[in-house]
Length: 269
Ligand SMILES: [Fe+2]
Image 1 (cartoon, rainbow, N blue to C red):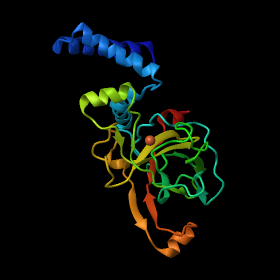
Image 2: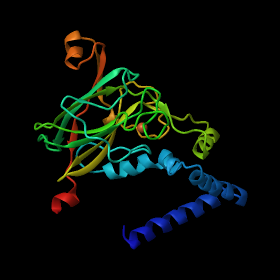
Image 3: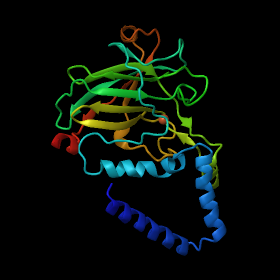
Image 4: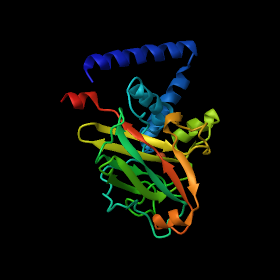
């Protein structure tokens, strides 16, 4: 980002906020309460959670505007780089013996935006467990549980077995929770899978995928659900198909096809 870009953005933000203070006749006590919330956010270790809840999805919308291919989505605060590469295929996300939750087979294809299969794309998948908690973020969960990396095959197809995550609450006991309380909003995000796609020539894309008909789809606390990010989902209760995935019970079949648009900067290089 150039200094010119910083100047343009910061000066417009300053004008916008000054106008906001005048319009709403914000008192000095109210102003100081607002800055106290930002200080408390950092002191509580919530990082950028407050901004991410209210603003991150708008920034990804800006990135998506006018760009071909699948839309991107918010990364959220729980991504960790360096997840283990999975052995396979077949790929199974690291999980505890008897990991709670209905089995989920997540599969699909990765193509270019013109529909040509993209071989060897890296998928970096992470999601919450059946209690809505993430390994290395919440205590008592084995390292890298429900996190892992694998690749598409030579035809751009991928498939991995894991468990279906539930909706979960974002941290609610800190300053972000107090702001949501003041607004009368709940703390829930709908059930979702996080995934990053990487290709040496196309770059990296961040997605977040949702289940049709899921709770909180229409009232996500982070306002991040987009119609294009909802997977094609159904339950499979056919012994022949469950056995094929080394399962004895019904599973959730979730399909999503990614169209990986070339990164203009990378393809120029
Ligand atoms: Fe998440």
